[in-house]
Length: 64
Image (cartoon, rainbow, N blue to C red; front, side):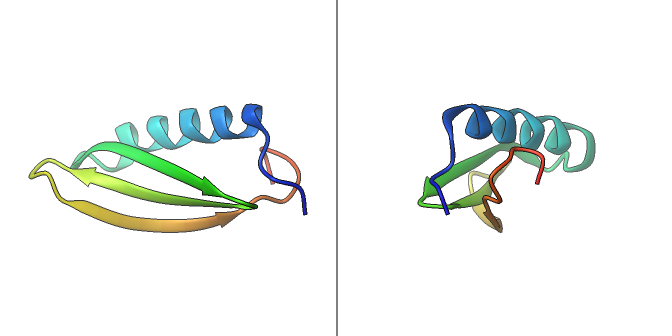
């Protein structure tokens, strides 16, 4: 499986940020780090803490 493209990373970051604003008011930001075909997503809480949220596997397209 190919590594995550730059455009897919940008798309994911934008979608996560928008979703967090609408559904997770307790989060200040959402941050994704990338390794190979995976994106590891964590939320930053208002008190400064970090909350691991999910690991996503790249399926070859930003929408899948």
